[in-house]
Image 1 (cartoon, rainbow, N blue to C red):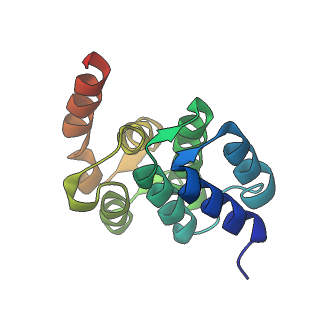
Image 2 (cartoon, rainbow, N blue to C red):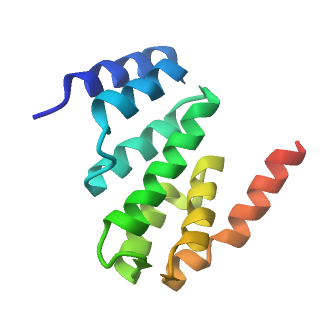
Length: 138
């Protein structure tokens, strides 16, 4: 069953092309109060991150923390990002090789937090770091 709060938030975000602090609070309290529970949750949040032009700063914190928590600590084996998971994550966060600043942050935080990360994900931080630095300077 699709969560009615999620439908309302997605509709509002799509209409305004923006993720507000209210949207983030609703996602945290009414949709993902127990964290992300499946890959579809990550895919949904990544799609929101890619498709909005503006977002409240709370969004970046929520998005990065939620995806890192799911990939590193909820997914099995805990603390490890295997090849299959790494390839899936790269495809979700960086479709066509293009990543948002938040997607880059997710990758860097996973590399910092996980005990072991497959090379499919390790190859992305150099590009991610450069992209983040260019956006930071611009």
